[in-house]
Length: 240
Image: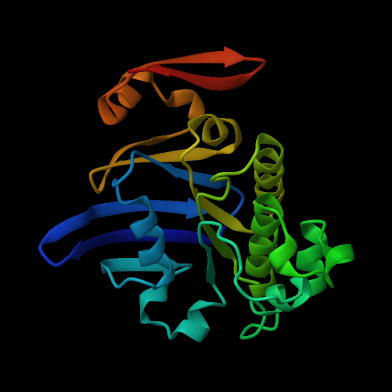
């Protein structure tokens, strides 16, 4: 089984943002990174994909991704940023083709995976927030990388599109290694195979959703918390 191994630290000048963050992940799992604002979650993804230059190592199947040129790194890892509206009137197909530019990925397959193939000639500027997030995922799929990093893929989406996004990511984990930064703890608990809880640039806790305890959340988020089971799914209830 091909494995991603990460051990990084990162600072903005004198300010430490990530300190000895170390973990591994394998294809076939959906790994969610959770934690309060300012914990370093988005910074960690940007370090992994090469937008930022951390200290340490990022290896996939014994290949040091940090040593690769961007074009070569793109064959292994891709990044889906937080959703924002496109300012340019590309068609959906043209927008997704940008992901396949350097790696010659399969655009049609990517669009069919998110159910946008039949709408491929529509303008991406006319998509709703949830539909635009699907287009971003399709663009990442078209790149053909084995690792997909997503920064808050359900941010500001309605519950219908949030669930649709998470269902697609759950399906993709059979063929990709999926790592997502998640703010919605309940979606993270429901769909993740494993969770990493970041706090102040360090890993505070790591494990499966059924191993997460209220006292851990209380320590990091500074709220009173309960975790209850409803129809087989864990649900976080919190109070200030």
